[in-house]
Image (cartoon, rainbow, N blue to C red; front, side):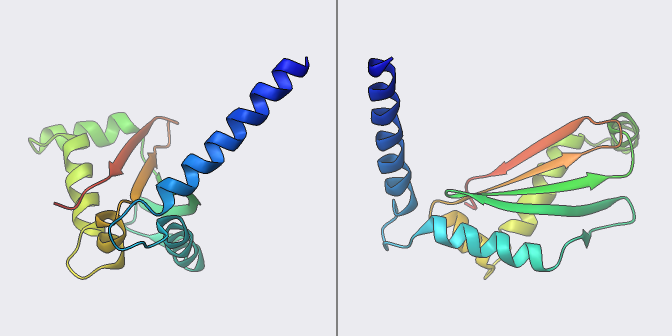
Length: 140
């Protein structure tokens, strides 16, 4: 039992040190975890954010250098997939392109955040409880 406690303590100290390193692992010394909290907080002030008649951003949270955003879609994933397919488009690729375009817009604070080593992850939830995750780790 003591060995287990010692191992858990060691792992939590190692994780904490690693998490702190990942927060300032950029050339300019910006605390990216603090920036993630700022971005999530700014999103939270405006929730829910209606993106279209079918899509709304409902939550935002910071976890280290990651900003996790959750959006709800009023349609089932199969319906959305079908509509995209009929238009000759792929749902995942289209969502990745659209999300990247918004996050990586010139002069936006989210673009600067990502370019400094942060990550923004959208979790799109559909009415049938299926989901689609889009992670933005680079704006290049």
